[in-house]
Image (cartoon, rainbow, N blue to C red; front, side):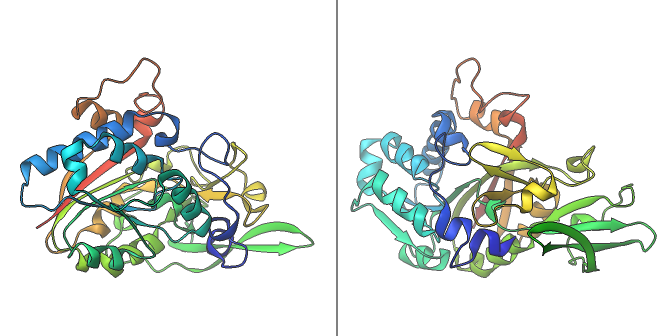
Amino acid sequence: MKSALYDDDGGYYSTNIREVGPTGDFSTSTTLNNSLANAITSWIQRVWRQDKKLPHSIIEMGAGNGSLAEQIIKRIGFWSRLKLEYHIVESSEPLLKLQVQRLGKRNLLQWHKDPKSALRACSGKALIISNELIDAFPVELIQWEEQKEKWQRVMAHSENQQWTTSVGEDYEIPKISSLLESHNFKDGQRVERHDDFVRWFHSWIEFWEQGHMLSIDYGDEFPDLYGRRPNGTVRAYFAQNRFEQMPEILARPGHQDITSDIDFTDIRKRMLIDGLKEINYQTQAEFIAENDIKSSPGDPSTNPHGAGEAFKVLWHRKI
């Protein structure tokens, strides 16, 4: 999965992603309407009012096609914009080009290849935001082997241009993990682990000295996330089509997005370090309503049977 998404010569995000939104392979909430961007902007303004000593520096991790940054900068207000420094961390060259095309080169904008560079530029003090970032990381797909009472890695193989999977070596459960909680999974249950994201997160988080962080993505709590999902939640998107069967997920490597839901029980446990406090965890619909944003009827961002419930908002503070 890592090679299919991030290989330097042919990975989806490295070389082949064309656009994010209705004309791309997949859409995000901020490419469909303004409700979420308005709520995030309202949250930013509220945090700044409450913490007046915090510099007006924003770091967006993985900015997609730049639509969220564009809406925040537009709605942040004249006086705030005069003091604003907006940093974008982007490792995908195709997405970087889309962002520059949309946003232009302004004095308040800076691009960085990694979070440490962005944090150095604002002396470690900033608001950090991300929308659908965690799900863009490659996952470890593992399977419960009831007879052995172990989780084992699922391996992909290509033979005669046909992709198949098999169970491989044991998966070593981290010391902090939702997998250590009790469950009643049946033999063969598959789940995803966002270990790559956790490693990336801990590689830079100690350089963040002060501020607030908002992380938005789709997922749920363990083990409810996997109810009636014996094959896990991994799936692929190609030309706005969703594929959930493994042969289709493994087809077109490097030419389609591969993603999965977030196990927020696991992520919330593994993100906590000394000095980092979880302030809130809520649905996207609750977050939008809490920030005084009145959504229109039929708004997918707040639909309780869709994105409004499926997406979660995680708020941390670093003191």
